[in-house]
Image (cartoon, rainbow over the protein chains, first blue to last red):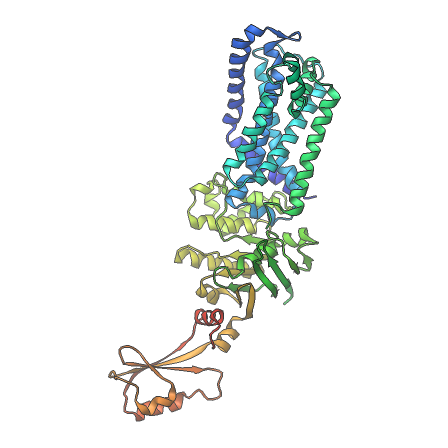
Length: 253
Length: 309
C-alpha cells in the first residue's frame, strides 16, 4: 500500500478546501439559517409538530443529509474531473499507485469535507431549535456512511463526465429531486397512501428515515432497511469504481 | 553501460483500429540521452505514454531497471519521471505544494531539503510560494521538471520540453538536461527541433507512422548518412557550368558565382582533387572554398520522406 500517495492526495484535496475555508464554513451556515427562516419559522409556525417533534427540529436531519449529499457529490466529482480537465491526471496515471489508493485519497478527502459541513449545520441548527440525539453512534455511522457513499457516487460522476454540464446533470436532475421527495421536510406518513407506496421506491427515503431515527427515534421505514439500503448503495458504488479502474474507462486509453 | 529501459515489440492500437505503435523495440543505456525525432502523429507521445503507464499497451513488454511496467508497475514507475508536452498544472496551487505532492505520490516521505535542492537547481526557489497562475510559461515548464524530479527518478522522459519557448529558455533547458545527465539520469526526449537533438543527444531515434526507423549514435548517424558539400565561390559569376566540368555533377547557385559539389565522406575517392584541378583548368578563378555537412534536419527529412540518401 502506497500510504504516502494516499496522504499526498488527501492533503492536496484538503488544501483546496482550506484555501476557501471561509466559503466552506459560511456557505452551509447561511443556507441552514435560510432554511430555518423559511421552513422553520415561516412555514413551520403553521405546522407546529410532526409526530411529537417540533417542525423546526424535525427537518434538521433532512437538512444535514441534503447538504452533505450535495457537497459529497460535488467535492468528489470536481476532485477527479478537474485533473482530467486540466490534464494533470497524467501524474496520477504514471505514479506507482493503484485504484484503491486513489479512491481512498480522493473519496476520503471529499467525505471529510462533507462531514465537516454536516457538523457545521448540526451546530448551526442548535442555535435555532432544541435538538436531541437519541442514538449518537447510529447518527455518526449514518452520517459517515452517507459522506462516503455519496463521495463515491461523486467520484464516479467525475470520471464519467466529459464536460462541466455533465458534472451537474446527475446532482441536479436526479439527486436533488430524490432528496426533496425523500422526506427531507416532511414525514411520508403525511402523504396520501398511494404516494406513500411510490415514495418507498426512492432510496433516499431510507437514508433520511434512518438518520432521523438516530435523532428522535422516529422512522418512516424500519431502521434495518435503512442500514441495509445505505450499505448496499456503498457496495454498489465501490463495485462500479473497481470496474472503472480495472478497465481504465474514461481515464486510461 | 547497462540497459535501463528495454522496449520489446511494443504495439498500441486504439478502439477505432488506428495503430499508433507498430512493434517498437528499443534498448536505452543507463546515463545516455536519447532524442526521439518524428513528425506530428508519428507515435512519440504514445510511446512515452505507454512506457509511463498513461496508455495501456496492446502487446509487448517494457522493463525499467529490470521491472516489468505491467506486472511490477510500482517498482518500474518509481524509477520514471515524466515531463509532459502540455503545461498541465493546478492554477491555484503553490510551487512548493505541487512539488511536495508529486514526491508523496511516488511513495516518498516529506523531505524539505530535497525539494529545496530541486527548486534551487531549477531557479524556482524564489517562486516557491507563487501559485501557478502567477508564473510565466517558462517557469511553468520548470515546475513540470521539478515535479518530475521530485522522486529522484533514474529515467526522465521529456516530451517536447522546449516546444513554444524562447531561445534563451531553450538554452537553459539544455543546460538543465546536461546537469541531469551529469548526475546520472537517463533522459529520453522527444523534439521537433533537430538542433536540440544535435546539441544534447547521445543517440538519435527516428520514429514515423508508429515505427522506429532507426536508432543510432548521433555522430555515427551524421557521418554515415550525412552528405558533405564543397561550395566553390568564383571571382566572376558565370552563366552556366562549363562542359569540361559536367562529369562532376555540380550545381550553380542563382547568382552564378557559387559552384556546389556534393560528395560522400565515406567514399574511397571523394573527387575533390580532380574537381579543383578541373575548375582551375576551365579558367575559373576561385575566391573562396567552404565545406558544409548536412544537418540532422536534412537527414531526418530524407528518412521520413523515404528519399534516397
